[in-house]
Image (cartoon, rainbow, N blue to C red; front, side):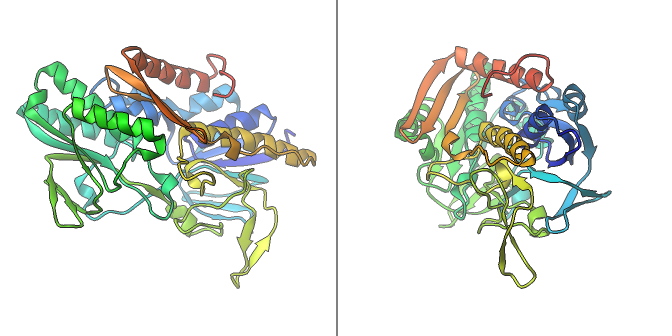
Length: 400
């Protein structure tokens, strides 16, 4: 097995987990990433309020690689040609025996995107959010709008949780400073019921939270553009804002446009339950069946499943572990495979700075359980666990 080489694209939750578990299966693994650190996005929500710094959220990929024995190359993927068995990057072209694609998704384009920052975008945007908030705190008052968008072509590509968390943490910060009454906070989204995929109970509780914390809501109107001083909607109404944080929905990564991968309407890679990319196209556009030993995981894929499905880090990691198992079985000539669809659920600890809420959703329904005080420290503990387990310093909890 040690002679079989696997090329993994992406240094996020999907790619790093795949590299770690492929090494456990005995493969020689090379991971290509365009940045030299693994970024713990779920805990980056504390950077805007100063409760965490970039170094707390970032883990050097070289340290993770050394702990597990895989190779890391920092390069920018430009195109993937599965028929050639090659990945073209800015600095070099790479061959592979097995390929795992986990480079994430692109972002929906919005007019005036220079007028907002995102907690789920480039990691360097998080400290910039803090700078903008600090400027308004120094001023003593302001209007702040935070929200997220959707992708009609692929609803699973929405990421709203961090937007809820950042505005709740900001409320808590302003309250501690004794200036909450000097700020107008508004949460906005183009859908009528943002957070509906978490379940009816969670949706009702979110409404209670907004009212209790005096956070305005602006739902159900499509966004036309972002301006320096606010957001304009389809009916030409405007939500005024001194600072806007917004999380665009995901769509296909720009690399996929230059590749020969099968894509859905949103530009995401189509896979089967085993994360195998099996359908490619010849020059005439005719579909060909064949196993090209190419897999895709995480935000890069067109996720199959129920209407409420959503992409999260733990689902990306399930896919990664399954792929490591499936590639080993393929190499052994076995027909055994593990699928991801029966593992689909929504699971998160939604932090507020002074507590949290446990959110869970599966086919049986959803629930949200408030966890005052302890919930905040539970999520802090998860961040510590994530870092140290990736570095091999502590044992992995089974299934995590």
